[in-house]
Length: 637
Image (tube, rainbow, N blue to C red; front, side, top):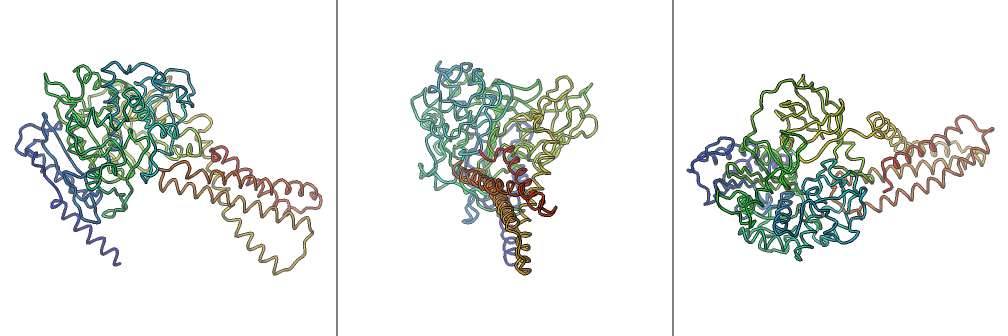
């Protein structure tokens, strides 16, 4: 009760103090004319944002920094909540946060700078820029271009290990990180959009090789310094910049309303894809560099056509569907909007620019997967394009079904994960879909044939404002969302196969977790009865018991492995490798028990009772099913 009372009082104080802990930069021009892209007058912008965030700060969100720019100047720069809850340190202008995947935009900017100089060609096979045989897991001979990397359709699987660490001591060089976490290629280049951290860091490595500088030094010299971004670093180890380290916010996880727990900072060997750190005002300077006034030149490029090319669309799944613009993701705002979101272990961010309005918004939060402000406020400020009156729309039932993310592990035991988080599409009337994914739901209305726009639902799905179904010959080939495609289930893992696999998994897990208690009871009763059994029968029971306990060991080992990955999937493969080896060792031990058990049962078969036969056959059968499941889901790799 004492703890609950303290939590309640603390939550109330945190909520009441959000206005006290907010900062307002001297750069804010509250009386400025004009509006946001959604039509909010700039004169009332601060009051609007204050009113919006007060619904979340202290309840669902720890802290956030919001910066907006219009026509080359900051019109709002304000922080809410705490950068450090324990020390009651508020978010302020010099609060440093992790950029997350917004960091990718500095990679693509670097690429475009070198392309402008003729040192990189966007349609050239990237293998010509890499050391010989650097990519060793390619499935196809088709060229992989820089545009494939920018559009996230080079075909790489999602490799789940050695992406991020919780200690700077684990960080290696960019080249070592790329070699350590190299994914296999599972799609032909251009075949599917599968958001790829690896592809982005690979592009940064090419920048490193061509420029002759470590990537983070290149960014510092060619992007941050020219823009006056003194409070940012293109690297995940902020300890290298003590003056920034002392201002870095702690990261948090949401537990329940008003309750948060501290998370860890993000450290990466492949740091270009998500390792940048800096203030929101610095990030706003970066955004403004893409919004020069008419007749003026961006400080990032020497030629105006380079900026025009970068902001031009480079990929879309269909007309009307937001796509990719050389690394920027399009957003369906009232006017053409481009940007990027980001997430690290305990931070969430969003950056959007509206070139037509010379407007940009930056939101940074020191809370994992925060969406109410990061995406909700962005939507309110940018607005959504109006839904055109549509006619002759196909029935929504044509695209119903369950779909798997193209961004997925293709090898190893983590290939099971995407099958546990399938996207489910259900028709809601003739022109609307209900989308369910990982516990989130949203309603999407059809605005053009097979093109749907979000109209309601969980705020986290605001990251996917639209979806498009590619349908050929009456079959859905892909469901395209903001950063990835969702694909039909492969034939070998259709829903009947998945359901059968799940049923067998429940059976064997239940058996091997319950069986040891039965064996214990049998042992106690046997000692009490003090009955003497034939030697062959006693040996058979011992072998069956050994086999059963070995199966229990395998199940427990893999349940622990699953729990470890659920609690923290940012792990080095070296952390889980011992458990993979345990699977091999216990499986070998199971064979040691099973082989003599089968021989013994064959020899004494005529004299065996039905009970004796089942006591030997059933554990063996369960072990075969268990091992088959582990092989099927690749728990040996």
